[in-house]
Image (cartoon, rainbow, N blue to C red; front, side, top):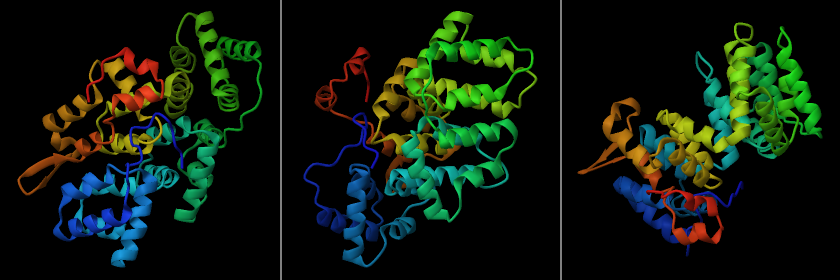
Length: 343
């Protein structure tokens, strides 16, 4: 389990899976969506899996199958995503990003740029187990050229030693070349420790007097494919501040993106994403999600109606980002209090 101290979903106190299984069984029979959502969004992933096993023993049915019969649309995909273990969920997102006519490069980059080598190893194993396919081969088949090299390098992330001054000099000299060499950027940015790379990027920006993203844009203009340029810039953004990058992803308010980020990071570091969202937009994530579902529900079909109650799938996720101040205090997250957060 990828457990992070900055997740917004924590184990439910006094968890009793037998009681939950009984309540959930009744709710599924009555199609009581509110109760289903209340239980499953207030339990940790490990607790949901325990609940699913007890439910199966109790009803002789798979919980996922029962949920599919009662739920639909965005709400169904959200709840089923919560039932997956983290590496399985990310493997599922990668598979969906490669299915169909076009490849969702943004989602591929999001996952590959923000996950650690160990997490990516777990994802590869889950992908193979779930789909009986090799993730690296599938990624290669869906991408091409230098962008494919970048994607594979991100997947492998073979971290090795590096000397800061030498790495700064290598990138600085490369930027002076008339003919850009993508291999230098790919190798260096995917084989160094993130802290090391942040220092390299900061020093490089100080030396050049511009952001690395702007330097890449100008240096590779009209030469590299759009995908590779986007990939390198995304990687740099994530190395600088992956929480800001994820917050900017959420700002698109696309159903699959919002659900993907929030489910994937709910027990790991969603509080950091929340802070980054507030600092970058001046609006709390809670408020932004509310306004999005009210203003343009047709965009992603957030609203789900049950009897006289209308709730949106994304507002159910708000239960996952509500936290108590004492929980944050216990973690000594001083930066969290630099802004007033509205939940």
